[in-house]
Image (cartoon, rainbow, N blue to C red; front, side, top):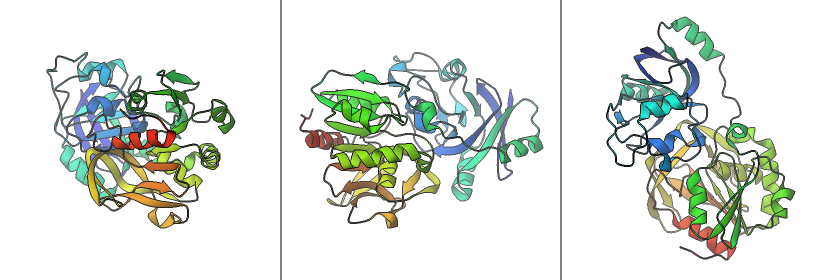
Length: 357
């Protein structure tokens, strides 16, 4: 079926529909990864977004349920150049088209994703809409202009506590949209992980008597998470060892007086270089974020910048002066992506007095 992608700047891209074809509004972003689309589709940080894959052929190895990062896909739409008709992989459970149909996710293929990516790089992340069949461009523009992305963290967080693993070290995971591999990385190191809802009060967290606190990734603007930031002020004061990733990194920075801002088109891919300032060593990382901590807003009496992006010099990590809290913007749990920075989970284990793998 004919499909049309419209952007808020008036540009349109005509292609073919796949997946569950229904009209959808979204924030359009691009990801430069060549593989790992199953993990991408099920990453809660993509809630509300239409994701453009810069790699031209997607779906050639199907979808393996074991690789999913949450119970279902969270993105609004999937935008690709070409969908493979054949899923060639002995681990494949279902082809990409069937997976999207089953989970009510619309897709569009057959468009020039290189031109679309250039447009997003030059103009920045934009609101957009995908329509199927006979689309009215004027009506699409009207609906796009009235669209705003709602606060997505409550949509992707758990609503009650869940426990994982049976290790001796207890980690409270504050769920802003966590990826499963954060949990796996902790359980593999001998932790019992209790996953708390995003709005859990600090008293509830402290009552479990955790050895450490993990702040997860998540979608949207961190400044929308006012209640969560208030809780993290108490987390910091408690002195409990704390490790924060992505959204959690931004929220802890806000809780300690720093500021955040939206990037022009974000960092999304599995080949982003970051430099650790203490060692001057460069690591290749998996990233998925549209907001960053403002380097000029970081009080050197509170925290020091530990990692920076080699692409745009933005803040990629903070070490807090308390010695008990550290955070990174990138994803050391990877999935998909390089495992260069998995040692940060070992650092967290050391802070909690636990053992490494």
